[in-house]
Length: 79
Image 1 (cartoon, helix red, strand yellow):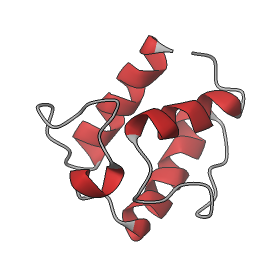
Image 2 (cartoon, one colour):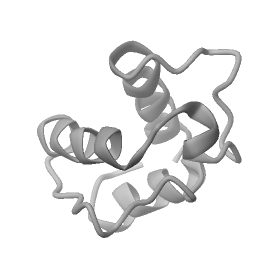
Image 3 (cartoon, rainbow, N blue to C red):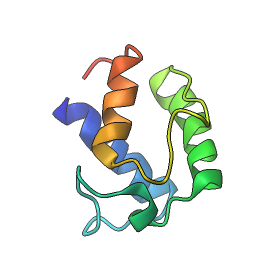
Image 4 (cartoon, rainbow, N blue to C red):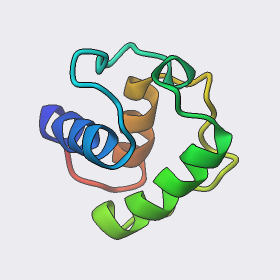
């Protein structure tokens, strides 16, 4: 799952402005300035990048990066 975490890190840092120094698996998405609207956009990017659908009701700003990685992994994306 480390490879998947690295891919999520790359997306969040390059596409959503998360600083590499802020990125940690236990970081809460809201603390990374990822609000509900941004997470909807992330869902669209995830569909393209990982080939899975992430609905707006499946992630929230209160989730952690690890929660996000687990969700993607659970939807069939290989770690």
